[in-house]
Image (cartoon, rainbow, N blue to C red; front, side):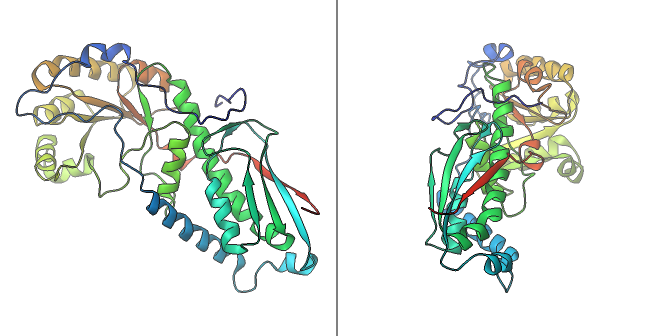
Length: 336
């Protein structure tokens, strides 16, 4: 079960401040050898473009409203609610968590009916408690009702992503390790889900296939070996970050000897991860700083064990591909 925040806070949660994990204290001062590529900063992450997020938000809201309203609109509200009726609804948390996706609620009503006003008592990334009043939606009652489900779908999903991320980030506080997202996102919502991960205290992996190179097992198979794939990726990276995925200690050695300075340990168990950290510590004397990231087999029950093993980052697909929605409801009033 995921840990719940104990009380609401006006400040957004964040990933724990960088502090050297037990296994990486001796690694922090290792410099890269002359002529060798350097490892990126441990907690480096790609920027999220505000204009791109705004454009993606507008488009996903437009499509969501289109599929919900079709050609005839909200026929139930049209049939049962007087056209002149005014009303309001309070957004109320029904579970503890972290709020994310607030801007999309406003966009839903902006596109549906600009007369509807959305106000918030909390901010993006705030820790919230069950029963807490989060905000209010007020205006023409038909429109408030029509946008309810679409607005809540975005808000509860993205808050669920932020809440799941927060649980993972809190589980590894003090280790110096960070939790990162993946490309296992909902099609069309990647930027929004990655923003929600950050709201929960996580760190972004690459945004897409365009901004960083991640050499996986199929690339290795196509290139003929880990060494071949590593050298080609570095040579043709165009200055983009390069990470090499390995599934054994032998592949780890091969990747590092070929120039890898950022390595993803795929499906290593905790003991294998400790062995990989120890091996990298030995190799850093010749090759300079090398980053390690764990991926696969990671759960809330064992994420602290992986962090304590000494890796710099932990990638968790479950932050986005299977985060449960955070329960948030709209409590209606007949007049504003």
